[in-house]
Image (cartoon, rainbow, N blue to C red; front, top):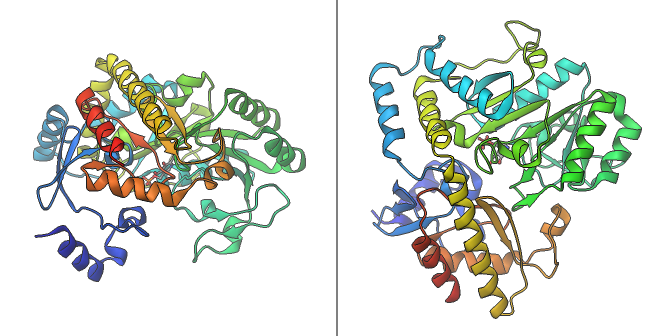
Length: 421
Ligand SMILES: Cc1ncc(COP(=O)(O)O)c(C=O)c1O
């Protein structure tokens, strides 16, 4: 069947033909390829066309698609353990791997990044007995009502729901600050510090395109939350086990109170988790008063994929060096090509996640900067790349990822296609 026929029929049965909006290629002059299979760094559509994949399921596939060892583990588990809704040894294995590698006391498994962040917020509120949450414009923490806020930044501005169906009441305790802007956070804490349960931040933002936080900014967040008795939550759904084994926490050397994970820890199956200090985590039911539960949480097949993925990453630490080498090569060569063509751009990169912003600005350090990018130019670039077998995000405000299966030849192929744009 042709991609287009499948996509058109999908539109009859699923809103927009998709199960998550960005996949629909809205505003594009090309339709999304319908993906049938993946192996290593490559994915194949229903027409048999091959793409080098730089989306990697939006981050999880750091080992590439259908890694043999990971898949073997999952199949082995599936043969004997599908779902029990009871404690299993596999959950303990994954919990230990994450806690010991990242450096937290305790963890709770859930089924997605959204579930992880919304649960972490509830826990922070329960622990501090406060309601207000500080979040940064341009950071995405999932589709939980309290995070879907379109706001003029700053404490004085009234929030507007960022989606239909979000009651104004459910965002009245969300306060929006500017990313990488210490003063905007200072102002909020000076006015409302005693009421703030937590600050949630992507330490390396990936959802306005890649925008790493400055060290001073994260240090300030650590300091101010400590001073006012609020919790600092690192949302490492994208960066966890991606930018380093110890995530952004390792890169910056800054310790959050709570952390959220998803993507890589599930090895490509639906998974999420949140964790932190024992004293905070033991506020969770059944020990404490904060209720959070899940029929499928800690599912054995998911856990075995996560265990196999993390084991492989832990046992092959050079993977991160390899990813850094390849990513820095890719960045340098893209810069050369675009400079030679007289195209204005900024590349932001942290380890194996990067974004090429088409902009007249010289830096992109927050959402306001990112919004000034030439999204129409990005659309034409992405259409060209995807049509020519280079699968990148159909949005300027996303990251490009590398896996350990990408080779220099794959990057050179990317560069060749770029040269022809
Ligand atoms: C930083 C961050 N947090 C949370 C989420 C939500 O995760 P999920 O899509 O698994 O619900 C995402 C998704 O991309 C994310 O990048």
